[in-house]
Image (cartoon, rainbow, N blue to C red; front, side, top):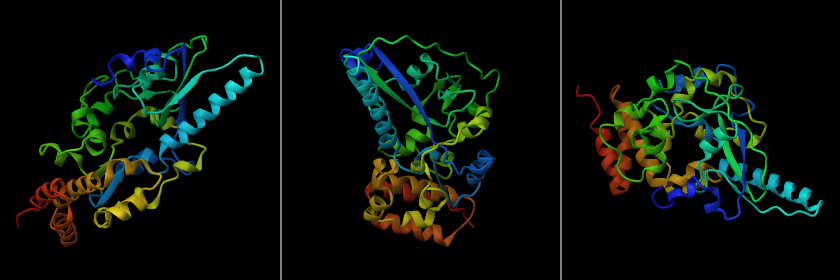
Length: 311
């Protein structure tokens, strides 16, 4: 944020000539998502040896899918305008530049900011990606919608690390999504036990949100979950070499964290699983990580091995 300054809030400074921003959403729950999916996902958190990956990251990398669709939309608009002798300058974004995506979505009427800070829609919950098309065409603005969270505080109450300090106030430094994906160094020791079996992202605040009863299933096969990204055994995931990690995460958003952070996250999750009782398989996996991992990984595996209850 310091690097890009006010470009986030001033589209024309990011893309000179921008007069309007077209916002879009893409639902990402797979078409095969069963009824009661929220309860199914919450149950995963009670199985310590299961590595939990955020729903949005279980299929193809959304950056590639949504950006390609937005580009097609922009090019289609440009062709139509071209038939009338007009031109369209444009640039598409999806979580790929200093863009205030949620705020733009709210101002354009795609939803309101929930107390967890995510965009909510009465007919789609929050299980969708956001994208934008910056254009040099003056378009009539759409109207924002009102907030509909009422007195509900489920998302605030459920946050494992208490990262949601109050309505629409998030301390990203405590957020499990930030810790497992964006944060490159050691995870604070006091936060590790609170992370449970999350190894990439966290959906807890969305899983308890009543509005996600109305979450829409996506129409694209791209977001169908890969087997190892949905319910993978932590011990098995810990054995992945860097080459195997790269092969299994090809085309996936997970690849962006790299093998070292992947091992770090799994070490923390294994340590939390070990807290419920001695498990030789978990101890063996941690010892292997300790022998082969980087200094960062070894620091986390040492912590994890120390979580084993004293008999």
